[in-house]
Image 1 (cartoon, rainbow, N blue to C red):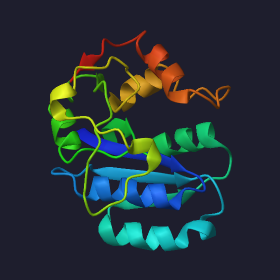
Image 2: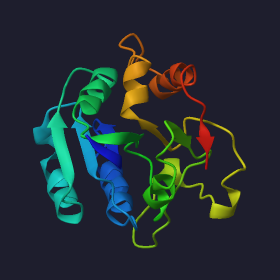
Image 3: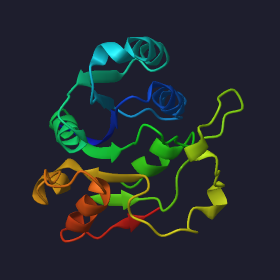
Length: 188
């Protein structure tokens, strides 16, 4: 396991356009993650066109087909992580250009979070309606929510028991509550 490196995990189902937007935001990071694991929760043949596009712009992506529900897909993705820290990136989220670089400065901690969406605005890309609200970097401390862009150690993930198979909604929130039993979060 590589220490002080970040892997991203993204699950997706029937949203190839959003996933491509997300991929642009990862591909344009000033510092790339060490791994990006995308778990497709449907027949992967439905996504072949978007996979080709994403592979061209972001060759580090590992695609997996796993048609057993989002919570099981997330656990599957975590099992593929080869580095010390994980960032859970939803397929409809976009990262600002320096998100990975900024979060990398805090990898001596087990739980690091930003309390707003680190949304990358690119005039060349059409933003989805879910990401229309854009936050400036100066507003990083405006909100207070540990389930926006969060990085956590794989050790903490394993210590708290990983993804709860009983949850198929608010999976990230439930995981954060259990993580907070074992680690003090560092707010960026």
